[in-house]
Length: 441
Image 1 (tube, rainbow, N blue to C red):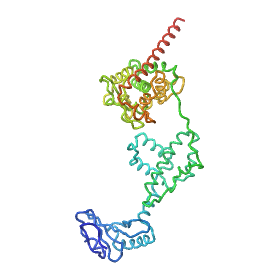
Image 2: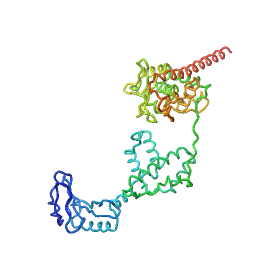
Image 3: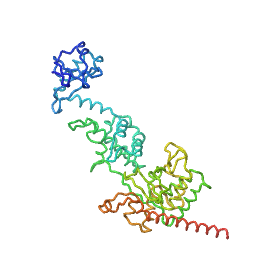
């Protein structure tokens, strides 16, 4: 057998220690193959850097191309040792065992859940690109917290029964989190399966994903039912909430962190934006000087960047924030401590807002409240969809009611803001009247 590497053809030779060490380096290519004249399928690969490795290659039934397998480096193995190992490997290949597949199976058998997670986070791509930081953090938390006892064990040892037991345990106290954790686990196990799948379609590990198996129709587990949230500020309380937020946004009477949290929630109420989008807004995405002031969300949940107009009330808020801008921090709603640089979930302020509203509120409740106000002031459904950055589900919305000009949405944005601020003014007058009546009494 001769080498098939272009520019480095040679006749088959009897491989010995001295012969292997005297083989010339390849020219014009990265490697050359030299085959033994006595043991068919046994050879040496010589790279342009002088690395010499023993190899075997022969036909394996059902493997397609002739598989080539590296036995080991010359120097680590003697030529005689390599020949013995080559003959054993060639016999296996004669019996239909593909050494590449076998090696992949052995490697797959010991790969841990943590290792799979690391590879998944680094290389997983969606149709929109790499995973978002929030998605990565959620998956990492699942592996290191929820599945901590499995993290450093081979994924091949994760069974359907173990998954059922853990899912039932989690579902007792946190059904929604249990659903999310097992969706993440299913994705990781699918990744491990496909990563180690052979070219002929076989799966060396997890021939069936145990999470998919437990949830299949008629299976041993069912996803926990999740009721859609409908929380929002009661309409007759919106004015009182706005008044509270403006009082806490006053830098003359509140500490900086309180002002920032109050303004963030006010921004979300006026715009209907998601907390992750609003809290990460930076000043380079805000235009306060143009005839039509705008703000821009580049990174959004649905991967649809958009630019929206700034109403009068929103302009007042943003100018207040700009006047208090933190040096060296480009976030509109900066964090005064921590590594993120921006405010996350302003829970303490939401607790105060909830007390005034008479119901437990969370960030997404501001989004629903803005939608309610938009309906109240007569904003049509297409403009409400655009303001909330929902993708159209019909041809009309996708192809016609999609004007990206912020000026088109300014009347709607202004009407929403005016209704909220008017409600706040009414609440302020009512509070003032109560104080007067109490004082008179």
